[in-house]
Image 1 (cartoon, rainbow, N blue to C red):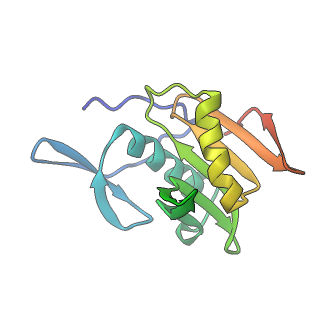
Image 2: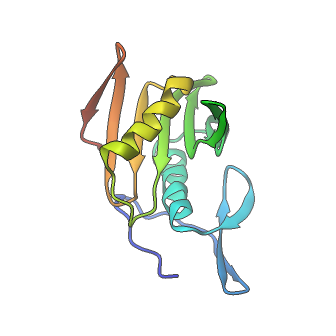
Amino acid sequence: MQLPELNFEDRFDFKIRSDKDKLFIYDLVRKTWVLLTPEEWVRQHWVHYFHHKKKRNLSSLILEKKLELNSTTKRLDLLVTEKTRPKILIECKAPNIKLTEKTFEQVARYNAVINAEEIILSNGQHHILAKFVDNNYFFSPFKH
């Protein structure tokens, strides 16, 4: 798989290995090798961004947390916490997935349960930032 260049100012030092024609990437948070899917490529950029650029402790980053929504189990891509409170909910899409109102509504439904102050919707190429204030979302440009 050719890994696409993503829209991040920084270049991160990823550990990637091949096994039986599949690529794996080392996840700093889960401390294990995970299958390198296009969505995982985007998620790992965000993990490195928050850990290296924003200096967040790895313990403040939660990956693939289970969430009960309308009697179904969903998984959050990445949640950044601050003193155990939800701060930023990140929904990662593969680089070829277009970010639409429908994809934002998905993460907004997750946030109705999580109550994070901010949402980032990202396909690695484009990043949408929304702040949740007084039961409304306010969109602003994402600044690295």
